[in-house]
Image 1 (cartoon, rainbow, N blue to C red):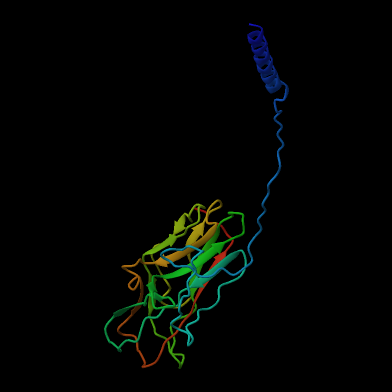
Image 2 (cartoon, rainbow, N blue to C red):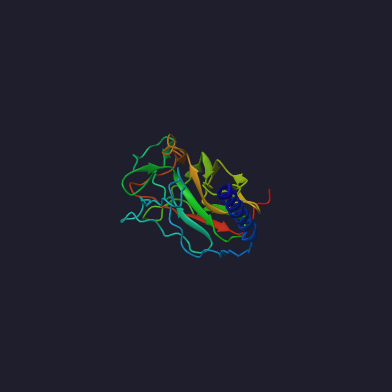
Amino acid sequence: MKFFKVTATSALLVSALSFGGASAFAEETKTLDSNAIVKFKANENVVTPVDPENPDPNKPVVPVDPTTPDGKPNPGTAGPLSIDFASSLDFGENVISTKDEQYFAAAQKLEGGEEKPNYVQVTDNRGTEAGWTLSVKQNGQFKDSQNRELTGAKITFNNGAVKTVSKSAEPSTVVSSFDLTADGTGAVQNVVGAKAGEGAGTYVYHFGDAAKKAESITLDVPGATTKYADEYKTTLTWTLSDTPANN
């Protein structure tokens, strides 16, 4: 009986010490906040062209210019508000006709031979979402090597639309169809406009889709116009201004 009592007492002492220890050594919880920051500034670098059908800046492309000997297009403009690329238009070699004729601009070729819609690419990396306006004008009528005009010739853009992967609101003004002045007076056409709160990031203004990429830009030439067996040329000037759309 004495042995039994000692054993029982010892067990009770151990149990009491265990519970008492858990209470005496409980951990205290402390918290402290630290900081994390990141800062952005306007991007002054030239932006490379993207695929007009999948305009992901992480997947740049190399367009081919059909009007230059080496196939290289004019370089894009630098700065946070930039025109990165504009397709040159090739209406092909055609037989002289006395009828009114319509010719189609060939699709935009990429290095490697893939064909895409003709397009103009712009980027707003100012970090302000202040809006912008894209415009275009024709710098005089088509002329041949002897400075003879292709009188009455008119370029028409159709199936214009905008694509982007940006989460900024898309430009609220997108002109789907427009003519450039047949008399070559160089009237400016405003074609895409972003209001304040719109248009941050990279956008492509493309003409047609996979099905209509080679029939969305036309050149109409009157049959009565005298045509010489020569190459006729003109230029288009695309302008991106920091003036926001006002509609």
